[in-house]
Length: 401
Ligand code: SF4
Image (cartoon, rainbow, N blue to C red; front, side, top):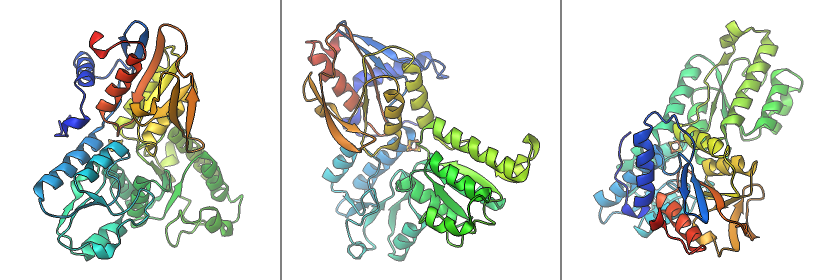
């Protein structure tokens, strides 16, 4: 895979050497069990895959290229480049300003942006509406290649099924930049609808099977469907694509369920389902799959707790937390600063969406065994720092490894 030029501040020699060793010994990624870092009193299970993905490194490389290639110019990102506060803050310290926040709230009015400004598109891509605004402003320098090629691949699939007259069901978090961008592209070529989870897939099935009047559709899926969507016609042929960073089991369950619904509706057999259902498999990206598979394998081993490092608004990190939580006490932290002491940790609750404080998170036993991983937008140096802090509580050092 291509090597990107990303700033040294994000790198960790320690983590790089572990990743390199695993990669050299297992180029086909067959062994998904974690690396075991045994420090005696502390044993760390480090996931086989974690940290910066292709799309994130690509976006960071291009953002810094934009800074270096445009001295003296004003540089703007449409919104956070990726969902990691450390990376976003470092860009802001280099003079980059954000036009919108992740929810799409305007931070800098469009009137302030002019044709000579430099604009960077985030890794999630952007909506066609936004592209039109930039074009109308006559902005000459737009860094489009910062969007992730795996997101673009989803848009290509959308166009393919639209060409064959399928309605596009986008499974994703409606407020997530990537889902908003995919929906924007999708609705320009086909009737389109966003569903966020299985509960909404069940609601959709009610309309598909005429168990609920089509007149209820606008209210149930308010702001989630393309203009002119006709629930009596547009649910006859569907294809499902998903946000690239969801939980694999969720996307599979939803695709299976909608396929079954289509079969029942049209009385189809295995051989002719394609008349009404475009089989897209899932459109999760390789990093989402690798990181989730690595965690699933890590969870086959016993541990006392899990620590997941990532941005609190990071979808892929949250799903790693979800997987770990099913098995053991899990702490979702943004950096080692969240580890206040060996007794106290401040961590993000993905359900209540608030910071919580837990005490006595490290059990009084030896060795303490910790599962450790991070999301695709988390720099390796943050993982190294978590290991260092953990070890310091036991008078241990990373040099012992
Ligand atoms: S998580 Fe996947 S889709 Fe998102 S930026 Fe990384 S490689 Fe691209």
